[in-house]
Length: 492
Image 1: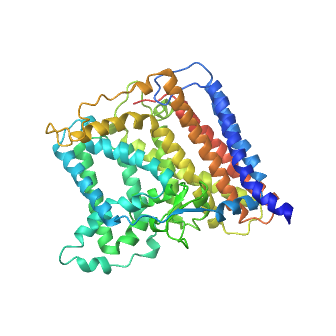
Image 2: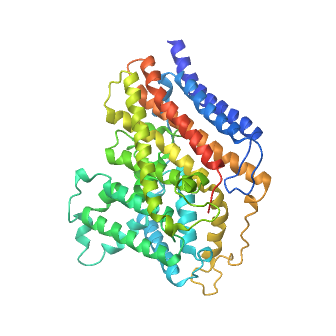
Image 3: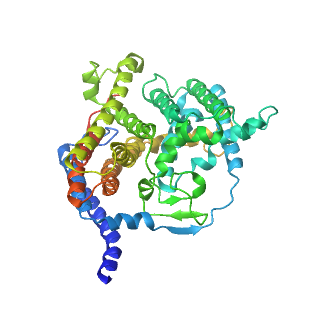
């Protein structure tokens, strides 16, 4: 009994120590073989295959290390959490109303502000501070969107009007269970298509039009089916930010992050990634949404490479423009999504053929889909980090004079935006190491999560290890793909 207690106490320390060692190996190797920056400001002469192979070896090593961890280590992660304090009674509706008013101001600025995207706050705030920076915050601090969701505030104001008050208590329709996450999938695909393929996603007026359309669809959905059901299954951003918040070490029963209700209300802290083990079985639509999120950021990187431009017959040195490539890039985006589903699904099927699982294929696919969440976020961080460092400065500058009236609301109208971080060898080297490490660490976490889910569906350690080999090979391959995307020459 004493030996068992000691083993249980040492296991989590061993887990995190092993993970730290694998990351350190990558950093040492990556520093010696640094070869390329994401923004292609420097084309260095060291062979890129060194750090690509090194990153893949780290992921492979992590599989060996994680395979030695007994089930008690993962049980420890799931059971243990620390209560910090009672969550403050913030006026959630009030914060949402303020966020809704801020969004409406941004839309107005899109119409009457400066037509240049760099000086208009709508494209800078939405694409940089919100879509990129806000996603970073969710991975760190949890489901912030649940508190400042502008749709909640606008819906509260709308349903306060005569004739609509009854809709708050009794929606017009009952949400069809068979519909699942289909609305969120369609809306997220439309959003990703607008960002990646539409010719002018930065144009303030086009973006204002798109924001109004999405706002209208969301408010109509909330009126028809109720705010809870539509935000859970229909609003793509509520689904996306809830998904990213599963990575956060913080949780609260009131944020609806999928972790479940706590016996003691307030803010809890857990080991990072624990919530990925507590999501439960996802419906098919939930799995498809996660695959689509990974496909969007993967295709964004792929579509810029010289390889892709050559594949579709375009000269990367004379970019034909987005309008010409709309059709082929739409097909490429869809093909990327289908390929990711097939690759992950095949890995699950092959793993089940090598092992003797007790659960269903759907349960196994849920574990694979949930393990994609850290990969999708790792790609998001790696892909957008360089542009965020510059465009966030543009956003701060544009917010000082949102309507081009000569205002200087926050004293940043004349802010000098510096891109020196992307033109200095040493800062580019740091940025690159962060990007590459984000991809490698994401895959290490993904393997850990997939292994933890496999522990629930196999009878013995042999079946667990053999069943995870196809998924691990796939993860290594995707690591190679991600690091190659960072290093490959890009057009546009």
